[in-house]
Length: 197
Length: 197
Image (cartoon, rainbow over all chains, first blue to last red; front, side, top):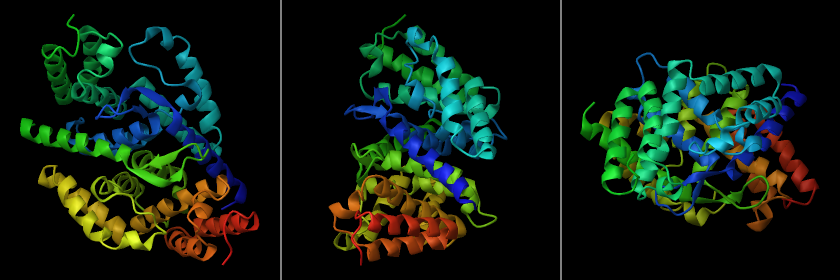
């Protein structure tokens, strides 16, 4: 172990502590406060472990978990983008790429590269692992919204059609979870917690 | 997939969302607020990925990460126990076992058992994976305290000798990280942020 190597690793870890202060739109399941990116990332790791059987056969679960722990770190610089706000999406990809360069770049090069690859893979959804991970990232706020009388849906005037676009992403990563999400959406519309299209 | 099975899994996931509301003694790295168990668990997962090279050879990193994501879930019922408060430790083991039964027991039996085993393994530190995971759990607040002028140490009148007991646990799981932690402790004493013994 070289001192410089360990110090670079600790610098990276101190930097990513900031993810605990990046606040998302959706709330905790009890509606008490908005969620932060760090606890959200933990939660997705637990979703992966709990719902692993709905991933396609041969999915590398450890890689899914690693991807989910890492997937939001770029938001330390780039901020959280609400998935239903298209105006924020402009420029976001560029900001996130710059963030990935800077933050993963704090690590020794042999560690920065694989973390950066994990993040790229997640963003591009080009593997079963990435599609499953993204499906979990999309289903988690649906479960929370369904539990909290619509949660962010009525608050930000999101419609059923918009949510069903996200359900498609879930279906692509985990068909059975996609079907379950579609049922949550139907139920929320029936209960008046999501505006029908 | 049976509906009952998926519903049990979702019930478990809704229940463990409560980990985001279990508050620990130590603060974020910027000292702005106390940390919760969910974001702490994410952070330890990232420590495992970043510091993996200091684990003993052949350590199963995926198992370490899984263990760390799960390790504090029992605190939903049993509460956080400050590691330097011996009065709270009494009865804690029993409360945590009951919590493990109840919370992991929300899952289908074939999933409850392996999660319970992961948690037992962590608590008992009987494998290299568990010893490494516990080392990370002990080093994280030391890094935070070192960054925040002693953090919880002066606040709860913790002494160097008490912290060095925890450094031993780090050494047992990851000798190089133990040596690093010992240096942090020495530095903190020199800077007047930790009471010498």
